[in-house]
Image: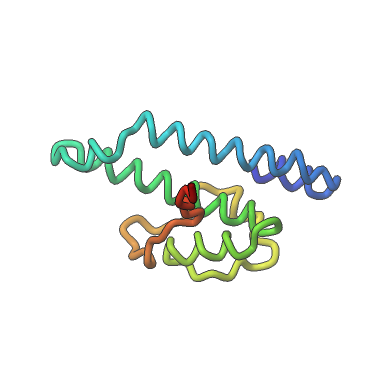
Length: 123
């Protein structure tokens, strides 16, 4: 994904790049729905599967944060901070997005908060 996105960005196909990023976010949402980590967490016999699902999602978020950083730098920084990585994304970090598995399993995370909080209906 990162390599394709880099080509889109270099060719100034920004809409295509954003579509690819949101497709990856959609994939993560489906992975959450299908994996049901809230159920896995309740079953001690499935602790390894729960840990794998959470790791995969955190790693996907690390990559997504890099990919969205040119478009939404504050959101990208917030995601990275919550993952315990610090908010700054180094120039040229797109190469890091090409490698899955760079997070240290079991590493502490930052304070978790909603990235896109729901707004109350103001009827």
